[in-house]
Image 1: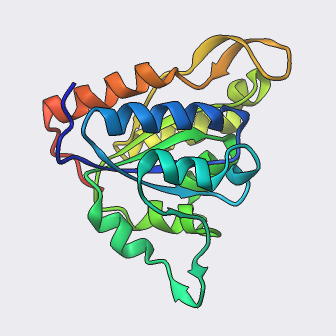
Image 2: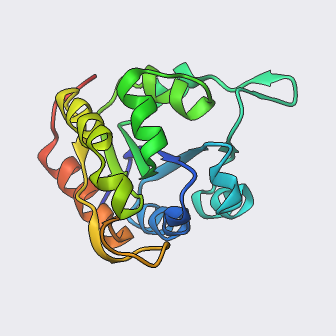
Length: 186
């Protein structure tokens, strides 16, 4: 897979599946992509910004302001060829569906001029909830690509759907996207 010169903006939200984002980042960089990362404040409870910065070879952004400087969500949204949200929690999906911009990740999403790909991750009951299904449908209506969730053992101990796709599967979706050169813009 060759993603040379592709710019991927990865948004990591607060899910136990965030550990997979480290592997995902490594695979994307190894494929030649330039990866920049925005994490929600909750995401840093699951994976450290230092880890993600080291793997992406770029500074990780979390807050709107950093050391008296504004982190421009507009510039990030213009820079990217693809915005990838992995993992996307039920909370973040809901915010994306209604346009709630309460952190840098969500303001960046709302400012993005590129296609959006989403890898949901949540517990079985949350995944099956009618509100989540409506939010997913709304995001599909926005022409966002939803990467199918996996099925199996979940962090809660339940078994069923809701697991974030494996990093290798997500990289395949991203590679397929760039191979098709979809002209979708939001």
